[in-house]
Amino acid sequence: MKSFLVQLGMNPQDVWIHERIIQGKDGKRDPYDAHQVGVEFVPKCPSEGCQNLCNTPGLRGVSSYAVTAATPGPTHDVDRFTCADERQPATARIVTTERWTARTEDKALLLGSRSKPLAHVCYRVTTSADHYVGMTDERGQTERMQLLGPEYTRIEVKVDATKN
Image (cartoon, rainbow, N blue to C red; front, side, top):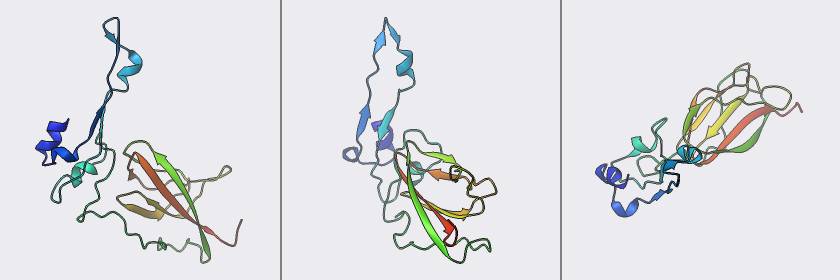
């Protein structure tokens, strides 16, 4: 794995590889261990390389987005967001939660309370690399987005402040 990353232009001192040793039983691989074979790495990308590697949907083994000068991630001044939709409440409060994402995946989220989905609400989902703003559909589902992992994903929704 390390030689592969070095061929991509990464400095060998910037690559940390952690490999789990798989134990066998009676000369065969333990079925439990078969699902845990893998290598983890956290790349520090050179200025001209590997941003696509670090943020490619479905790429196995990528644990984080590489934040560089060219790809700084979302701006930190975005306390306000709008969905440019007439259904957005005039007086809104923002409800924020964080969700652990174990590994990078492309998916749509279902937003809702215990009793009903949050239909037609403005949302913002923020990862270390990007943020996604939109309106949920009638089932409380967002558009598909890339959630990066392992890291926390911040989810914010605008709800009508005049309602409980």
